[in-house]
Image (cartoon, rainbow, N blue to C red; front, side):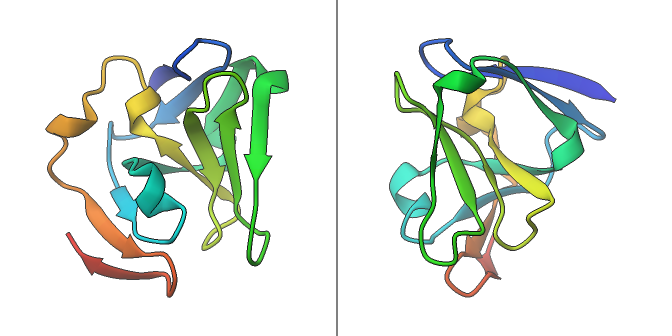
Length: 122
């Protein structure tokens, strides 16, 4: 198991993510919110992410079914993670927030149709 540390841009929010097999199950979503934020996300069970500091600086945004919870830093605005609508016991983590990870170097990224929750390509 590997633990990666992540932060928002200003450093007010710090979190850790435990990874079984490194970066895997990378995805982008084309729902109305995700296509605007443009992040590459990685799904992890809710037990594998911990907010280390700055939880009080996290704001949450919800819409539509109000199942998904999208978290972002209230200071710098960076999206760090979200509780997934398709699996509420899992979080999507913005891999661009993880130290030592270059999201632009990731080539195996699946695109998910967030409106219908189906895979549309990779």
